[in-house]
Image 1 (cartoon, rainbow, N blue to C red):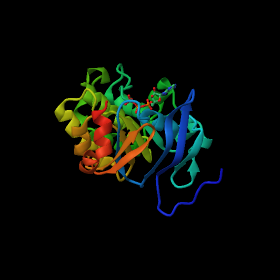
Image 2 (cartoon, rainbow, N blue to C red; image 1 turned 135 degrees about the vertical axis):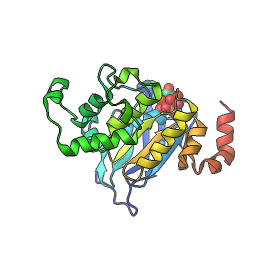
Image 3 (tube, rainbow, N blue to C red; image 1 turned 90 degrees about the vertical axis):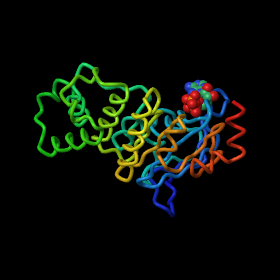
Length: 252
Ligand SMILES: Nc1ncnc2c1ncn2[C@@H]1O[C@H](COP(=O)(O)OP(=O)(O)OP(=O)(O)O)[C@@H](O)[C@H]1O
């Protein structure tokens, strides 16, 4: 398929994307544009299609129809999960997947060295630039003081930050994050919102979230999904006043 040329630069462009499971439309002509460096929250009731949307972007699920373009021209529907990850699309699932028996620093070293096997990574000397990058990420995710401790000893929120750091260190252009605030304390939730605001611009972020206090703290544009398509888009205040959005949430 010929990639569509867009008037505005976009990091992500979904146009008329549909996905059916046994005749049921999990995505139903979903269209969405994300600008480079944008932070976007995706909300919607259970079953709205949020996970399916992430699966389509990351190549886990192929759409039946529709365009999925990355960086204006790369047609993601023509690539598999590994290729899409290598192109700079990172994904953070809800549950942290850090290696608990390694230290915080070792987890970051491993992430920085990408495809290397664990034992190879530890015999590979890090360059000065790589060490500097690790220090920057440790500072960003507020784990400098815990660098030498086992990841298993961190709090739930800190494990989430470590994993976000492990993704950021790989320099993704687009990062998709699933319910980061789930299970976090109020303080951790606030810190996570600050982290995301700080790292957007260098990285575009799509955050799927149910916690409205967290979404408010992100101070970004919100897209409401319902029945596999966009129901409303705007600031959180705007979408919360939208009559259709109110009905969808109250009707749960
Ligand atoms: N592999 C699958 N086979 C069949 N149906 C599926 C499959 N994956 C998702 N669905 C259905 O598609 C719809 C959308 O699911 P999806 O998980 O994308 O929603 P969601 O917005 O992420 O929901 P939640 O907030 O509960 O995680 C749901 O009705 C779900 O049951």
